[in-house]
Image (tube, rainbow, N blue to C red; front, side):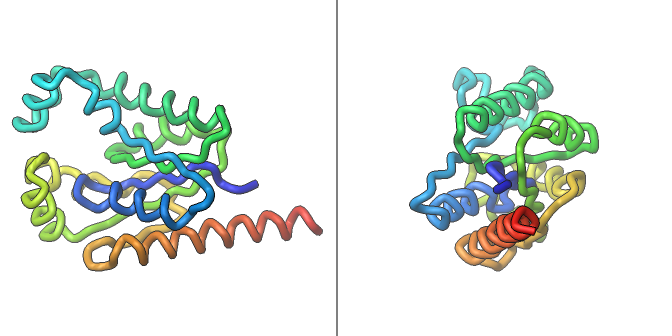
Length: 183
């Protein structure tokens, strides 16, 4: 069976969104949808989002409902027959377990995306929509908690090159599955 879900796990600023977009182009003409917890976060009232983001203070939100909502959205997309690239920051063993359970009925490819701290800080500063503290927190907590099929470093490797590696890994998995089915 071919994976229909690619999970990109890494700190904010590691390049997950850029990599997801490169993967979407890499996989054409097959369409893969992109989804992120940010998809839900950006749907918050602007004043709430701006306060949380600028102050790096998310205490007014229940992170469990957001992540469960994101998992439910991705599952709904998968159940409808879509292929999904899911951009996530899994910062605890409990979060990893929740993700495994949420997607247990789907073939998935877990990709841990690493980036050196100085580069994360530079990217975060250049973006201007996150705090350096958020980048540092993500660096110390993600990606460490999933059983990764592939771990990559985006510090100096372009997203197009990383997407080629992921696509080759996915194709290799499909070929191995096909060989097992043929024997």
